[in-house]
Amino acid sequence: MLVIIHGWSDNYSSFKPLANKLAAPEPEGISADIRHVRLGDYVSLDDQIGYDDLAEALQRAWIDEGIPTTPHSVDMVIHSTGGLVVRHWLTKYCTPDTTPIKRLLMLAPANFGSPLAHTGRSMMGRAIKGWKGTQLFETGTYILKGLEIASPYSSELAEKDLFSDQQFYGPGRILCTVLVGNTGYRGISALANRAGTDGTVRVSTANLNAISVELDFTKPDEVYYSQHRTSIATAFGIADREDHSSITAKNSGPRRSTTWDLIRKSLLITDDGFTEWQRQLEVHNESVTLRAEKRRSSHFNSFQNTVVRVVDNHETPVTDYVIEFFANDDKGQRNRIRTQRLQEEAINNVHTWSGDASYRSFLINCTELYQILDKSEDRLNISLTASPELGNRLAGYKTYTDEDISTLSLDQKQLRTLFRPHRTALITIKLKRYQQDKVFRFRKAESQ
Image (tube, rainbow, N blue to C red; front, top):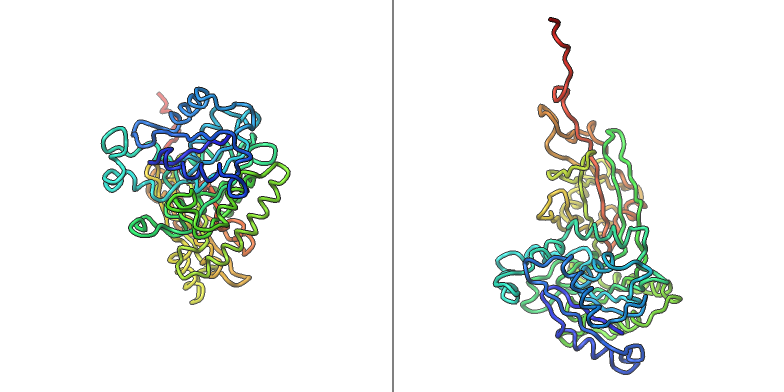
């Protein structure tokens, strides 16, 4: 059986063309492996609906419809926000051994958010999308909050299914393939286009193969760096020249026959062939990336979605801070020019999550970053300044001078390990919070 689930502000009817194409006889479709197709339909524009509601409703609808619950007996295709819905459902109601999903094809999923999500609650979002909801002028506030770039929701979800001891994906489990386009919309819809996106989601935020890093700045003379968790259990492919809609067979898509070939193979892959499938897509992505980076527009450069969360040694969020990137020692004309270019060209966008300013996404242009630091001896240095500064305050941080806080210094190999194209890095930075002596003290009792 094949189940298809849509994304935010969409419905099941949009995916009838995709279902028909997949149900066609081979070699065009995969009819030999489809007995029944179910098109999921859920409410995403109501402001009262959250991910827990959708997961519970999905579980109830699954049982009511009589969809098989036998482990690894159902294949699934999702689009956009549908990826978060299904992953939430998986971690809430399934284990790696009991999940009914075998092959999971994610088309342009918003696994680590969408740069358009925070605009969905704006006046434009309410004017254009609001009338489609079950309540007048509602756009799905809770859904969009989790869908926003740098949302803690996506980081917490990754902790459950990517970095958990329970591995949901890989041979013998769910064979998950993520496919995403690299081209923005055409016509009036191009208003939504952002660098490194398919018009709606970033290539880097679609990819499930993420890393989790901890940087500890609590000691003034060193930075503790720990890249302690990496998830590479899913397959990831870039569909060249496809946008967020065309990759799902909408608007006469897909635009390229190679895209449809990738879709078919994703739903026919076996446990034995999955590791080779991952390798084939890596080779494919290298080819697509080389071609794309030669195009004039920086839209086609290679980006990493770098989500930073800053806390102090008490795990309290630090909401007022600046991350500083500089080349080598930032002295001399060459280094100063390169530091300026890092700020203007390598850091493409910084987005602060609307619910907590300690969470921020830095969209790093890896294409430019590698070109700016082009000598083998070049180092990328990263430091941080936070407020309140201790100074004359009763409590705060010591980050304003070189003596107060150390700098993370990356050589060429380390730089390419931490900043890699087409993926998300979740980085937690820890600072030490200080208190003046007079915040608490003991005094001698006066003798009577």
